[in-house]
Length: 180
Ligand SMILES: Cc1cc2nc3c(=O)[nH]c(=O)nc-3n(C[C@H](O)[C@H](O)[C@H](O)COP(=O)(O)O)c2cc1C
Image 1: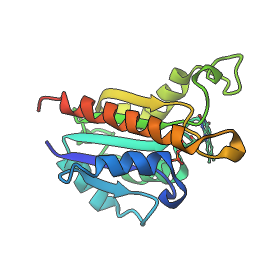
Image 2 (image 1 turned 180 degrees about the horizontal axis):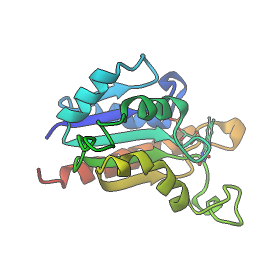
Image 3 (image 1 turned 90 degrees about the horizontal axis):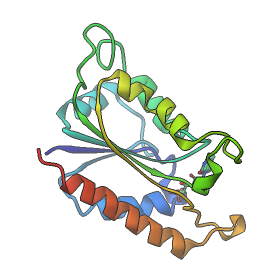
């Protein structure tokens, strides 16, 4: 099984949660990692990597309830007409997709009455759009809330690292259960 991991963190040097999760994933030396915060995207290379993948893991920290800019740009640039949508645009059809998401907020804040305005599934439906248009098969969305390592913002680094470990374990067991 070819696994492609798209890392949508804009700067891993400032990351606790995503950096810890990714370092656990690196035990899979056969997975391919594309770190979008580190380099310019070459569209043909990204499309070739997607074509070669059986499973695409899209990992990102939730920013304003959606993707950080590097991941949004990657989608805008790579999910092109006649590749990801359009009359001849079924190149990604049936590829398995898994979202791996870290969030700082409490889950309960995602409600009509809460700070984050809507239930999380409403945002989720919106950010899935390009992938649904590309006819990919969503296997799972693993999201962990309250991943805040910054004591100045009420966070705790060791609690965040413990959540990161649980998160990575959950993603890896979901992948291990796949029978390709
Ligand atoms: C610009 C920005 C916007 C954010 N917006 C949200 C948000 O809408 N909902 C949420 O739960 N967390 C939000 N957060 C918190 C991040 O999701 C959290 O810091 C991140 O997942 C932790 O991962 P990291 O340690 O790898 O950076 C935001 C953080 C930043 C920097």
